[in-house]
Amino acid sequence: MVLSFVPALVLGAASAREVVVVPAWKWFRESPDDPSVRRRQWDDLHALSVLQGLVNRREPRLYVLLVGDQGSVDRYWWRRMAEPGGWMAGAKVVELETLDAVLARFRSSVRGTVIWDERVPATSALASTLAGMRDAVPVRFDDRPDSLYRRWVTDSGGPRLKVIERLLGADGKPRFTGTGTIPGTNRPSTGSAKCDAYLWAADRFIKTGRCDPRRMGYYPDAFWIGRGTLPVDRTLLSNHDYFVAKRGFFFDLGSWDDEAPDDDPDQKPGEDARTLRAILAAAYARAKGAMIHVGGFTPWDLKYTDFTGRKHGGVPTEWRYAEILSCFNAYMDADAPGLGPMANASFFMHFPLKARYPQPKLADDAELLRQGLVEPSGRPVAKPFVAFYVGDYDSAAWLYRMMPETWDDPLRGTVPLGWAFNPNLADRFPVGMDYARRTATPNDAFITGDSGAGYLNPGNLVPPRQWSGLPSGLDAWVAHCRPHYRRWDLAVTGFVIDGYAPPMPEDVLRAYAKLSPGGVVAQKVPESSLVDGVPFLRMGADLNGGDLDASTRTILGDAATPGFRLYRTILWTVKQHREAMARVKAANPNVAFVTPPVLLELLRRERAPQR
Image (cartoon, rainbow, N blue to C red; front, side):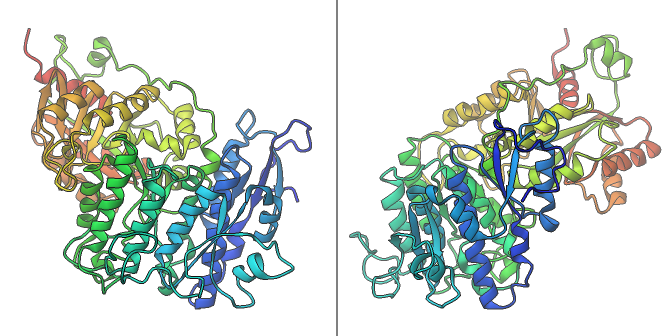
């Protein structure tokens, strides 16, 4: 069947690319309140997402409609790609309605299956890891007649997939029990079946190089099956495809040492965190200190935080996790709950990016003088200068979900804004990054988000590194960031999140000054300063888009005196920014709104020695 939602397609040409599109949203319309429905939904989405990663590993062949109302977000991006002259213009589209049909179509990409054990939910994450390594699909062990296991593995009328690995014992009992020794090793059990399973996998897959130690996915395991409070897209199973395609390692572990997690309350407090550090240490060693990309985020809506009855709040838990990652040369691609679901990253990753996306140059002295921002001498006039850091876009999923609303705002271009799109998001979502640059206006300036080409705490890149004791990772971080900054022509690091880390010491400050000659904004720095001639500015308050009166009062309070302020907004529309600017200007016409690069250039001029 040809999909009707892509009218621009030219079908049937002999040279046309053929893409299979699956309207998977139709499979998940039932409420997950019933346990049998939850199991079926998990099984179907898990298998589809992993299969997509396998199928798209070498070329874009399988596209899924899942995210948004009836797959609306995925439809939006398909339409963008299929526009005249676009990447997918002229593609031949074939629609498949069922999971069985998808497997049949791409049977040659699948060598077998990995059977996992619902009694140890962590084995669902291991199954994704193994599936990517072995070109297999994950199937939950369930011998009931209507199960995916029966349909794909044992029934005579099905595909009878070869079992490549069973993550439970041959006798049907759990392989991982949290007693004795960890199976297949001489390592004593941690007392936790969950943690034993991850350590077993780290020994077999990370330390041996069978998976890619530089690609990891922190996404919820099958604990969701027993909860029944969230729709299936919140499992973030749809995000697995990219990391499967890259043969990455999946995990789901808490980061606190002072309590046991919701999903394993009988473990010794902190066993999850110790296991997390052991996995990251193994990845660091195998990657020889290179930077490690970790997709996902603490699943605070399912476990590990006070939202689900634990001790610690969501932000402290995020910061503890970031602190640990940073100590092992790992950074977040932060698919946080709420906007976390993303599909098709394994499809998008093949998009042909340009070698370079230049930004317009900053205004010269004459233009700054014409705008009333500088004196004839070139130094800034004495007035309050304000810029907006438009976030949070440190997650490919958040960018994917929100661009149709925030970027396509018809008012975009009417006011100066600093779009904080982390450049590393081009790994999973190059389509969106390219689209933003092709459609930007002169008032759309691009800066990095947290904390450059990935979210980490730079203060934990250098010794003493509390959670690892490792030598400095600063050179690895700079080597990772530099090509991203170069491709996207980024001169400003928009926000360094220091979190629980120490303030950036001198060597880190100087490294950022070289990387970001246009300026750096951070939490734990002086209000304003120059480092090797590069301006550093302390981030201002986070503004609340739901309360523009309060946001306006915050800006006006700071603007009572001349100075340089950068405020962070989270998922604001252009309309909201414009309204806030109008309210501030009505109360204080002297306030000048500029883009972050202009703000930092004016700060540099202000702080530079007088000639």
